[in-house]
Amino acid sequence: MAQRTAVRPEEIRRHNVSLVLRHIHQHGEVTRAELTAATGLNRSTIGALVADLVGLGMVEEYVPPGRDRAGRPSHVVAPRPDGPYVIAVDIAVERVVTAAVGLGGRVYSRRATVIEGAARSPAGVTEQIVADAIWLASQLPPRARPVGIGISIPGIVRRRDGFVEHAPNLNWRAVPFADLLRHRIAEVLGSDLDVWAGNDADLGAVAEHQRGAAFGLDNVIYINGSVGVGGGIIADGAQLHGFGGYAGEIGHMTLDPAGPKCHCGSTGCIETYIGEHALLRAAGVEDEHGPAVVARVFAEADAGDEQALAAVHEVAVWLGRGLANLVNVFNPQVVIIGGSLAGVLRLGQSSIEAELDRRAMSAARSGVRILPPGLADDSGLIGAAELAFQSLLAAPDSPVPAVAN
Image (cartoon, rainbow, N blue to C red):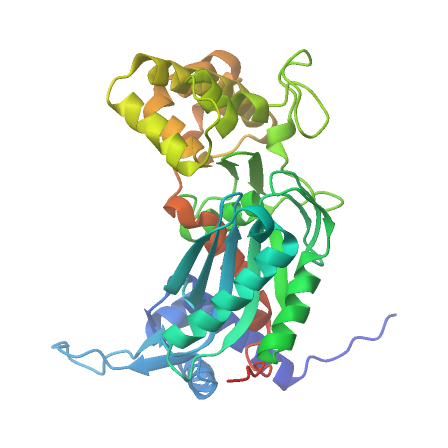
């Protein structure tokens, strides 16, 4: 018989501290009574664990004023505004958004920068993030300290080490981006911050599942569409990564083998029918690209322009066909459409739904809703923050890296 090892009291305490912090992180401000009910721990244990987190500088507690009920009011526990934060980064083809995000998912400060030319290279983006990290620190209370960096990248990213296999629209291939940034942060800031990177759609799915339109649901597909198209999948409450961590490349499902050539090397990928370039081409826009141009097409469609409306309808039909395949395979409760495709959903939802009705199996179709992101354009950014918080949430009493002033 295999010998069993007893669980030490200190290990139980660490587990419970993590459990309580995770609940506060997900739900924000809560009472001790709510923590007791949610965790199943007794009141005295919750009091001791909250005291530990207060001592670690992660949360604060107070007695809410104005309570007229008899008896002692339950203390309210909330993330400290000057407590630990992560540096969340959302990289897109035309811009980098960097933000300081605290426990509870609160965005304290952010900075968006347009990138082009050399600034779009791995080295250029690295320098931009380092500069943003310094600026963010200047906007926060002196006590606040970063505990990690999370990065959302529009490409195929190896989650375990942040290695970018291919980000075609950035023209990156075989880039150890997390390592590059980690070393540069150490050189400039004198910090050993952990750096995590993931695919933008995967992280968007995480954010929408934990804080957005899919909160409380266990079977979710998130599609992020801009120049490229990616997807993140939550199945039975767990994210689907695949064997190598590359699952979710929805943009490269083949819709028509005789269709347009895709940058991935195949032909007829769904990205060639529903990406921003397809929308602009159908709208008759040549030699222009970027979010402002796409927004202009949507504005023209809102104003009743026939060509713009026809372009949206064309993309919506192809999007509905692609969604039918996904609904048949994964049987989700909700499909969330983000990025520039959220504009297609807003203007062309009836076309998308009609195509789903026509092509998806009725049993799977009847239970699925098609929704815009609950976090708007911040799904990838908040997902990157969740990625960066994972070490702290697992071990709240581990030392926080120091950052040179």
